[in-house]
Length: 262
Image (cartoon, rainbow, N blue to C red; front, side, top):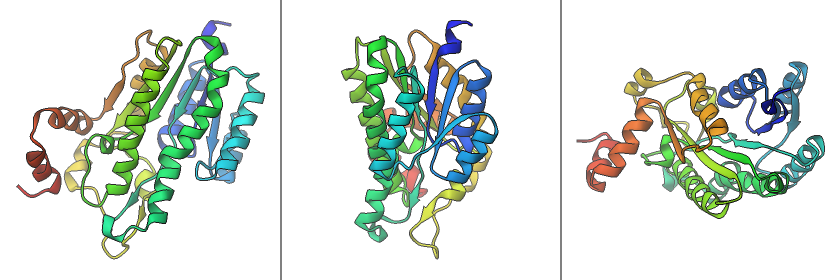
């Protein structure tokens, strides 16, 4: 077996979309994939498809601890990569969002990711190599009306990743962010709306730039396998454009574009 055959990748959020596509692709690529998802029925489906799969709810600290202990046992305390992909979007005007809804958004998109990473680092650090990769979003670069909670959690994930990368400098572990723009996954269907009478929807133009979840795979391969992985991987034209606009435009001009009023 080649060296890559032994490398274990843990992927969260494998029920559908990016996580499911990544799990299938990386297994075909020769990695040992340990897939997690929140829904027990989805875990059963992954097991039936021949995956090593575990149930884990990032909202629940106990669930994360149990899953992390199981991963360490399964892998003999050796994990090469952690792909923190799981998360969801809580949409709605900030004035309508309760503290509890905001806490739940951060629990899934940041706190659970932090806890799992912290628990798995002892299975990564001793081996002097490894990758920790987060699925962020174009919403980790810019925020728009109605997506404040989701964007705040992704901005926080970006800052968390930046610090983790600096703290792990020299350990052989690399930290990267994948920043998709519009991707056609079940994510949109799973968005939680605080105002069912006024749901937050993607602008019509977004459809023209939407890519399938497979679009992230070349970036994921680079982040996992290149000796010098990038810090950030924008995916889709929208993410690339926003990354540039955020750097070159004054804040008020960017606000005008993002508000949709020129």
